[in-house]
Length: 155
Image (cartoon, rainbow, N blue to C red):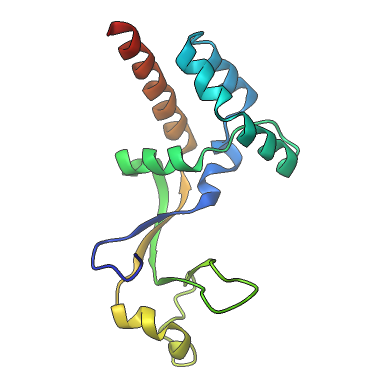
């Protein structure tokens, strides 16, 4: 994928954290639609909510896939973008499978060229999203939820 001739965009997992997490107030707002779709949306994420509480000690739901889809539908949801060489570590026992982003732009330095050789050979950088406009993201989520509920009742 990262060696593809197609443009690659990466949305960091961190974009679904902090202010992007559905808070108790957000969850109550969704449940306020008071219909099966709203209940399902919260219930199907109940394990994610438990995991977030266990991990952070805070109540909420982190939604990385919907954040990424929101950015795909409206790139302006992504508020901080940059281009970098990116690779996936496949050799280290400690970091195997980790995505490595050359955020310091040192891949081309002669001291690093051997490590980055394959990535540099492709010569393509990925467009990486670091932060999102959380207000825009939540508005899109709530609007999408309201539309689905309306369409469900209209059919």
